Image (cartoon, rainbow, N blue to C red; front, top):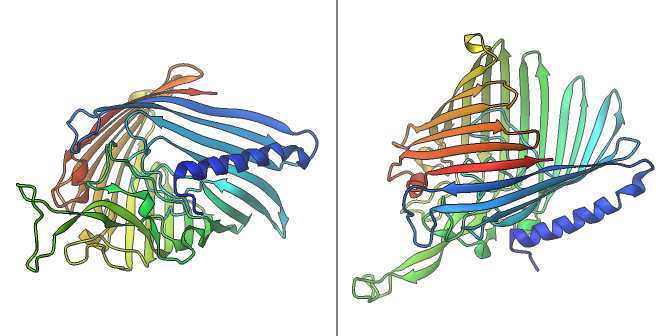
Length: 440
């Protein structure tokens, strides 16, 4: 029987992880242990009225993310990082996951070294700030934040061989993770609720399909270069109309078509995961105070956005890129503060057929680090869609209050949302967030 909910899967994963941790002393004598992590109290306020009934203007909750680290005398280690979130407004946002639960082994191989990470882990690929095109190993935890940067843990065998010539990585990825989506009462959701019980797969093996990936990376002086490939189940589902209901007129009667059959409209969306292949390239060039960044992909097998002629979209091979630069002014106005200015452009060759919300977007941002004892930092960014008249502003402030406590404030404002833009459904979901973090 397939475990359908993320909570069921995470509970099973956590149980496996704790069993492995309990057995870790068998590795050798002199086992060292370390406990660290964080606990966050969070709140979000949505100033505008909700677009859908049942949605709240205030949400609060907490996040617990402890890490247990075990290491024997030979340097072999086991890392366990469970994740738990509670949210007062959206039951789907209340969830658990296993971010890390892996055994780390290593040794010599020829003139280089090898390393193996076996278990659950999170891997990040890429160099750009706004749109991480090449980052495909882990599934997006979309209920965490609309910026799509939070990831779920992935079961993997991650093998790395590295030396003076660079690093070669191989991944075996059994067990596909479904993307998380907001529930009916959650904000920042699509017009129709995504029904996790209706998930489908192109592969006959469904979520048990074995995905594979590989990456080669190396530094050529000031240039850091990475080439990657992924073959398997897409992390991005095609969202298809599902669970239909009849359309009613003003008197409550069913509306019929020309042949006398009732006209139906979908109640929800069903996620469907195709099989894809992606080849990626990421590069970063450092020239004094400048950073020049590039990410590009070519993907086959993915679906484009639905339209009137094709309500579930069509398969379309495509290329996409993100390119930009960042310049840092050090010790501005003869102070300890550093100011970074950056700009990026993301482009998807499918244009308005793209399922990427950054299909033709310009990102401008500034980052001010005061470099004071409290590690105060301000970040402001503006995303301008060149294809639609959509503009989004984000402002973030971070500051340490003590050795253990820190505070983070964030505002996300949808300044304009084109009716033709898929993100138009979030036009009323601008929010202000305030988090207090305890680290140990």
